[in-house]
Length: 589
Image 1: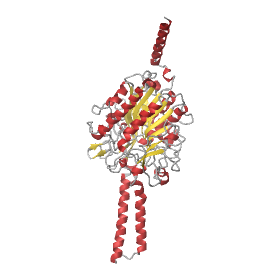
Image 2: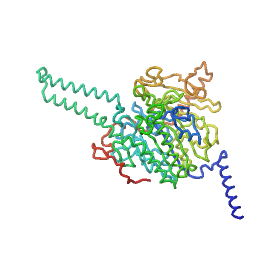
Image 3: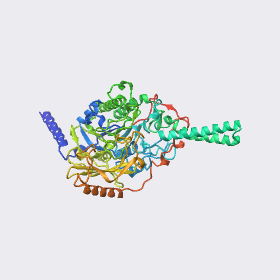
Image 4: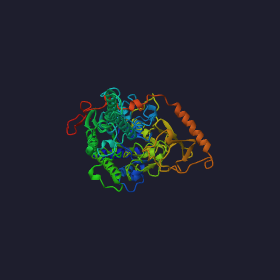
């Protein structure tokens, strides 16, 4: 009898606790430290996923994640390209604050052997969670730099930014990593350098022929010097671009290079195995796992079992393989009985790459109803991304939140859940999302959001909470080529400044709450509050700019240029080659 009494008391307590977890305003969800799994896709368009409206690409695992959790429909990247967007994601700050946005046309980390990267004095969410007793791991893409002054100082490396374990690609996938694909890195510059080399070589050959036929009276010594200069010029650029696959397409485990160049055919399976292994060996303590997928960036490396399976060619195949990988990570969490103690987040670093094409085949993503795409700082298609949260028992299920949120919000959200605090010595632009996700508040804390293209402010969003309107003013927009095409197909990627953009005064104004596709331009004649809205947004821009302070530009031309003395190398430079993945013995956490 006494045992039955204790049993029913225990059951009652459990029921009360479960009810307490669901009460609005309850803080029970943060009374213990959850495991945190952050999954970030690369170049995925918001229209590529079933739960965001795609009816032909199969993404059952991501769709199930949304069904079991919360789907955000106005989830915004802080930048439309990899390096700055990921810097903002890691730090909760606009990339312009850390120097991770560019003043030039080179807007991302260009080489593993560059000296720019996420500054060591920046605080990532991994650093905060590490101090709270979490074991922290990053599996996949980094693209935030490696070294500063020497080949092994690792000042920008993930292990110097709060991660206990790193396995992945310190750079980013690109066509240059694939032997059969046409080169992608600095394609226009490389063509100009090759043309100049040919002109110099032709000049040398002409002088030699002229000397031999007696038409030119130049000494052999001068001609040899001229030929030597031509050779040195050729080697100066070919030593960089001719071996890009060896310089940039590498895999690392912690500080050790394991593949140089990387073996593309096994990359997906190895990354998945590493992610699952991290979960399995850390299941008895709080962990942070950041799975930074290489999918679905070109050249769309897809394993054979998924090739030809989708209705959208190689890109669709790659998306469906990515969904399968997400499913395997979810399965590992369930297998280890961690589902109810794990917060899972899925997003993309920015919009799909519209200009990625091979002939008539589309190799980049689809951004649904939203205008523009990757590299476009203002248009929704470049910055509005999927955003999904799941945490059974703490977050509601099958909920859609149509409030402005940001990838930068992950920083304060996970810091709060881990029991940490955000830095007080700097401005944090992200906001803790838990009150919004749990339904304790109805509106996002974001009133204004600033949309940069490099260091250039292209657009501003104003969430006018009392009216429900979301105004967006465009100060600069890219010129599509051909005109009206919706992207910059002729030049391959849209610029941020110069002749390739149009400045608007007054700015273009849209109401995203009524016109999310930015198709209906507002004017003083169609919107009575036009002048008031523009005036309020301009005041917000002035206030925002007063919060910016000068910082070293990590993407300056000097910082992004290839420096041989910084080149990661698993041999004796320049003979850099290795494949250590056959060796199963390695240190891990």
